[in-house]
Image (cartoon, rainbow, N blue to C red; front, top):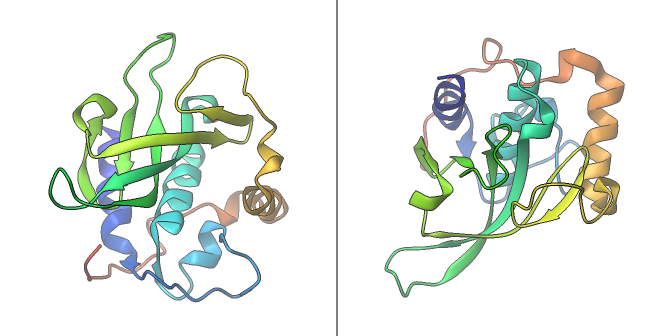
Length: 175
């Protein structure tokens, strides 16, 4: 399955760095080609790479969302940390269980099997939703300034800026 292959491949091609260096330090989020230049990134960089890679592979952008979540670390009563993942929403199912692509887990699991995640918002180029609501977005996607910048960068760069699995070297490191 494309989702599982892309998830694991990108997880192993970007070395985790909680404080990634950017070409433009003023830009909090990087487009995929910006994130991979130093070969490392944080959860945002993994999510951007996966989202644009899947869109470039032909998956409908309307079925993909980037989700801002709280992830439970360690034990069930462990602290929660802010995290970003990609979700694929099954087509035509108003209440379908989204599949989660996460840099912390190579396997793709439905959200119902990820009790460690609490979804705060999800977004794509079409808009912003509370959780994984379906239907019309609650807000315009450009309300997230950093996301608007990434969308503009990707539109200006064209398809060549999409994350390329062939042009990225394999890296090692903990995620």
